[in-house]
Image (cartoon, rainbow, N blue to C red; front, side, top):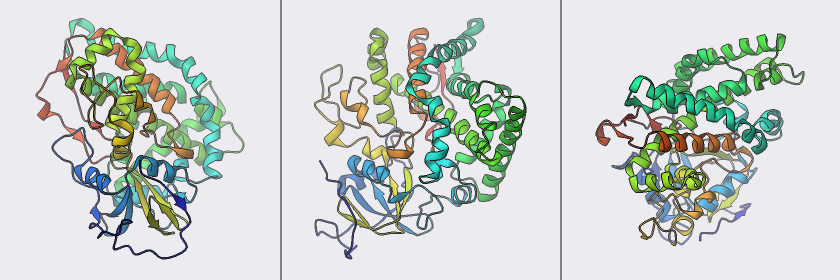
Length: 430
């Protein structure tokens, strides 16, 4: 297994060679183009990972940065306070002008470093603790059952699994938790898609952010006057939060609370449709579903474009000399397919060795994935997402045993220019 040394660098190291002394490869232009398989990371990232755990890359504006592809190295960077998550830090890497404008002009708490990040995160962390999420399980089950019933009402035997199931379930759950009226879902879903699209220009990104922040600020003010039993109400009445901080916390929880789970749910169903023998195994043994969710999170890793950081000190990672002011992109997708961690001896139902690029719902090592990130900025809602995915997949497998694609697979449209990878729609029949 590769070593991820994390020591302060005090002497210059030549950038023209690798740590083994061989000539360094040319920097990989980012973002790397997708290959023929839409379920795999772009081949450029996979090839970079095969060569070194840390390598040179080039951002769309021509600026250099580092690409961290090894599992141990990704964890090391994300856990190290010398790598800033604050997008205003010099050298922070961006893949589009729109994302630069949004992240630097209107930073949310996930784009802050401690202690400010920790202060704001603590205010909502208790609502996402394992105990609290488990208390919510019956409510999530009711939402999921209602969504399946609505999708199959009046003898319907076809649906768009994104619009009719994968999107409304997590949207309604996070609305219930936050205290956001679900009848406003069309507004926040549309605005969040604009904000997560890397092709959005700076003007449109700022406009969408302003509109959603204004909506949440108004809602928080109403809750301050008449609070309920929800997260936004509890934030609105806190004397140590400004109205903008309240709206910003609600903003991030609302967007991240439905977009990631929506895309994971749809892609997970598609992955099981492509592996019917594994879907059959889960139908026969529902107790395997929690482990299968971990494997799907590992296999799909929907943050395909990685997580950005900027070094604030000279640091050596995996033998690479990263300087203060260098941008770093941590590739969760390649980290989650590292052969030393996720390869054999895991086996499929047929007994063949399951390589990391294959789906194996019984893979024991899957729980070591970094699909939710790592360190102090690990996804706040990871427990909620796991519970939602477990319940959603169990319901689909149980209630729609004849589920299959309604169109040829090559007609499916994937969201490749967004921060969160996914499907635009998933037409199915049963």
